[in-house]
Length: 251
Image (cartoon, rainbow, N blue to C red):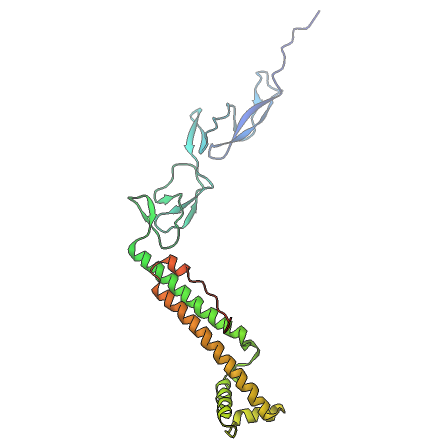
């Protein structure tokens, strides 16, 4: 004689895990309640016994009133304030708030045109953008000129107090070149303190002064040419076309 026993339901059942706000997270398993006679399952905390929601890109599913409700979901996406252009990361489900766009502003000079629904550049902003670009290029021209002179003349190897004597040394050397009986008090004192031959020092000072003068004149001319081009630039493209590259005399 065989026993007529009712088969047990499956030991586990797929259920839906929700977050604290009722939004669907994932499916998990509920265990059969072996102590119950009605075939019920022990649901983990925050779970519901329902089929998973539809997969709708850009939406989150929320369990409400016994059914899935689908809401726009932009969480983790970056949008931009149309008032300030600052980025804003969405961290809540629902329709997007007013005053944001998914298009980043090209730069700080553009402002949002609500009618055109786009970032635009006003006439005054365009003028300010050009003025700022010119100011930055002007500074770059001057800084590059000074850096080139400093490298070529090895100014970093000479202390400031000694650099301040170069003009007088050059003047004395030039005067001596015209008249070898001309007084050269500074060069004479340097030669004495250094233990160097005075005429040899005068010759070297003259050569160095003339080389520096040629270098300074050449770089000054290049710098002024860059400034002329910058003053004539009518737009950003013209400013960008100015490529700064200083060279040595005769190069």
